Image (cartoon, rainbow, N blue to C red; front, side, top):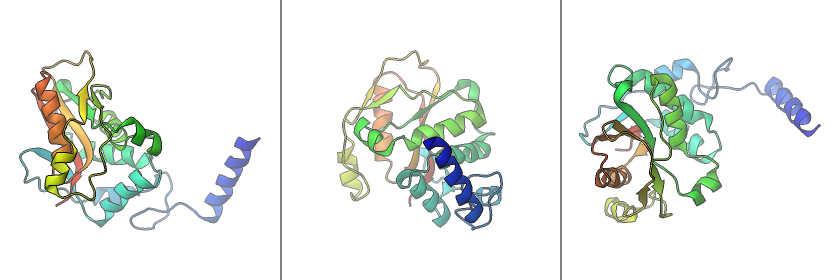
Length: 213
């Protein structure tokens, strides 16, 4: 009965307040949160860094999408961004030799948010590119403080020793695509990469939706 009531409330809300695109405000028919036209207009990143690749420029639209994904309980945006990133990367990634590995959250932060945004991005990427996702290879062993208020030096110190490796059957010859939502200084993915390297996973590359410049 309660479930039926929630469905009825949701239906009435959609009638009174039709869903609209986060970015342009246009009415959404079959899409969720963001219309196809706005997704197509997301500007690509120039990728001047040799240490990682970011798909999109971190403009106001993408900043809003990332904020909604991480802080306003809209996990579907992670899958949307993953799929759109996959469309842009389809010609440069070989699915036959690649594995997607999300940067993990600590279990306390995971419980608080309810999901890991990097997991969802990997789900979208994997479905679009037909690449397997391994969510168990890396683990977060320390619940470090948020990176958002720290400078570059503080960020680097804050992530020391926060990752570990789980035993899995992942082929060490595969290209590990280490996936995160946004890269700022790169300290988190560098730390994750060093753990992979020290345990025999020598072929890895960091991949993010965007880079904060």
